[in-house]
Amino acid sequence: MLFPAEALDAEICKLRGLLQMLHEDQPDMMDDVFEFHVTSLITHAAPDQHARIRAAALAMMGEILRQPVRPRPQTPDIRLMPDVLVPAM
Image (cartoon, rainbow, N blue to C red; front, side, top):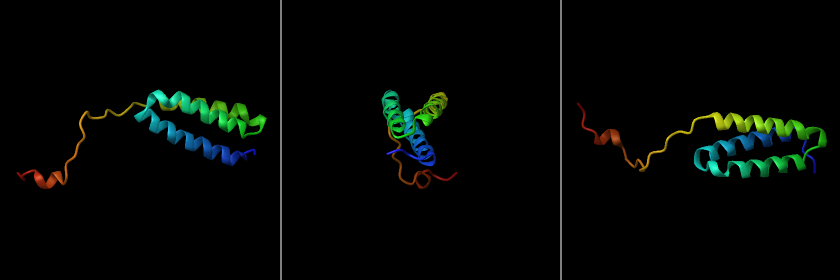
């Protein structure tokens, strides 16, 4: 089954979201997930779309990799209603 161009664009957007989550949480998995999904998209696209898919995906991956990763605290911040617990000055 071949995807129409609109469906391919939607799937590339979904891949962007997935890669952004992996960039934050599991960066070591990004390459494998990227290759799997791009290959899957290419196998479901017409041959004239293959270069466009790969170019869009590579540009997207580069853009995501250039984004800074937000630092994660070493300990969880579990405070219930912290404003209530802080004495007013």
